[in-house]
Length: 404
Ligand code: FAD
Image (cartoon, rainbow, N blue to C red; front, side, top):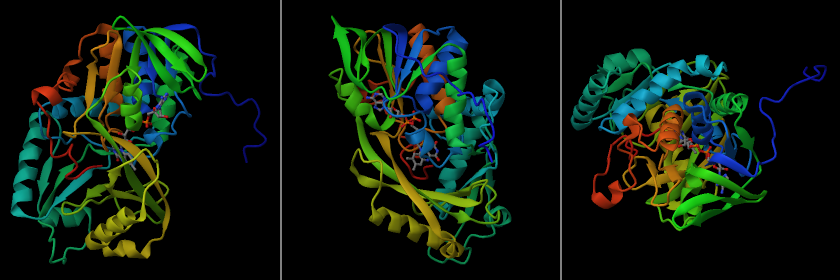
């Protein structure tokens, strides 16, 4: 149907790298593109390049299960994700791009008294932060999600913590929207350009080596998600990060029956339904360190088992596809947005399996740090030295008790 259309214009240019930039952002995922966009929009810095070794949207930004929320518990994460959700709410206007942001609600189930206590505490933190939370009993859950197995005697549903402003967005549209917005403001987005070295002289960053030649820069930001340890190693750094595969699955398209996002409290499983009707779901990490962006069958079986425990009806659906992405897991489950010991070199990583919802907030905060050399207040606790000083942010959400 589109073959008759002529004159399609690319959404962003395909520039040759310049010899020098004020800022180089390594990594054209959601976080790198949002960083470049806010550098230009908020700080007027447009002599900026995003260097992407593959293509825009080929990393985790295009592989995640698209869940967006602000339901963290601990200071540090609370204010950061609250800020990020507000940016999500204005994103389509800000980018003039349909990112299909849909606040269809996130429901975290609990299955014991102690889980209910924790859900109540977390809900209070959310409300104190200015976000929304409702503690539901079994009847409230039944109204929202009648398709769950309420007779399951092993893990009875005691209730759920409901976050109406959470929801889903179209992941690759987020990458495209930020890419177009950054490009329109003069940022060079350079695809098929892998960074292979970081040039440092007398403790100061001078630029990078790439598969398309050397490029000088006054400042360099590393935002490469699952490849964080490898890229930091180019600057002689060892990060508190391990890379693991996370898988996800989608079924054939079905008539709408799951209104929002549901997470299981007694196993690693969560689910939503895409606008095309596919059930999109996932579970736990494959528990071995790996740089392979594909998963293994034992975890697929584990996720399907959890799915059948919570909603046996899913057994009638056929899984169409599964895929994996490489997660930058930090040891406390919370991220890092900070300077490094090398002048002009900055790091943004440790998003674990929850960094899609962080895309606008992370880009905004990292751009602030790169432009001003001062941390942005909502991200001020995401320091690299917390792993040495012991000020970790061990949020139960962040460590994956109910990730998505
Ligand atoms: P990426 O898109 O991976 O970007 C990093 C980029 O860096 C890549 O494009 C890569 O090619 C590039 N790069 C690497 N090395 C180099 C180099 N040397 N030179 C140049 N470029 C380089 N989060 C949520 O909030 N909600 C969810 O529901 C959710 N579900 C998920 C489900 C799955 C299956 C997966 C895999 C992830 C999920 N996540 C979720 C996590 C989220 O997707 C990530 O935390 C986030 O996308 C990471 O940031 P990014 O978008 O910048 O990463």
